[in-house]
Image (cartoon, rainbow, N blue to C red; front, side, top):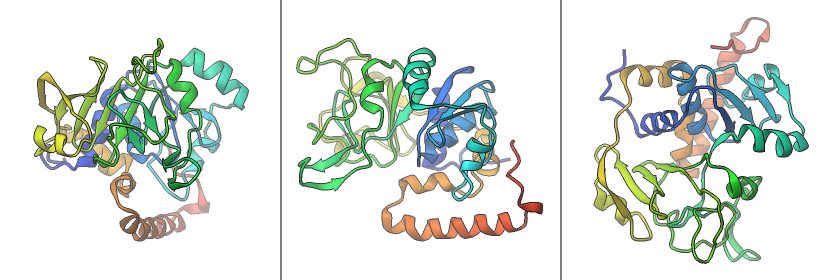
Amino acid sequence: MADATDYTTDDLMCTCISRQVQDGEVLAQGIATPLVAAGYLLAKHTHAPHVTFASAIGNVLCQKTAPLGLTRVEELWLGQALCFLGFAQIACDLLPTMTPKEFFRPAQVDPFGNFNNVAIGDYYHPRLRLPGCGGIADVTVFSPVVYLYVPSHSRAVFVEKLDFVSGLGVPTADRPGRRPGPHLLISDLGVFDYAGGRMRLRSYHRDVTIEKIQRKTGFVLEVDPDVHETPPPTAEEIRLLREVIDPLGIRELERMSGAQRRPRMRELVQQEKDENTGRVGNERPKSL
């Protein structure tokens, strides 16, 4: 049994994500978001066994689970899908009727929860072109279950003014409307909400001070009067994350720099290859 005090920041972030999941929900899963995937799976293995996953990989609905992977990740979604969805079905049926809960990872986010996944710098001559908006602009207009997560909390991410707006936050005087805005933001330093119309610290992680969080935030941070340390994962949650959900440690990639990530991905690919070679008849990974 894992020691409940021996947990990593990745373990804690996944646990925080898991705690936002309620049984029976539809959970939208994007591409290349292993921290979120691990958090969803942790909820599925503990308090929310009846959730359904809506995956961007293949546009499928799925209720099965499998350990996180890199080279065989499509096998769960494409091989065990309940159904495959076209774009019209997703836009007209899934989003407005099922209202899937989803965690987005912003490259920039402002005090009001508006965020940017398009470009850093001038749009026409950017310093960095980002993956893009996808359906974020549409979903954030109406969805009450938008969540944000930031694996590496820094002043480069938490900015006073965005270079480009691709996801909408809470209504403000210059961006009015009835949209609910993000429900919560989870970073590697703490948990935040927008209850007062501006980002507010609700809890700080172990060994992190409020002063440190403010130093790493590019705007004045509001603090909940009842701010407290984030409750740690249980020993069972740590065991599930490390032994059942993500034994390879794939979720750690999200908090690595590019220089760290490249050699680590090569190691993971080789590790998966070695494991796959040992499978009889090259069979699919067993559902858990």
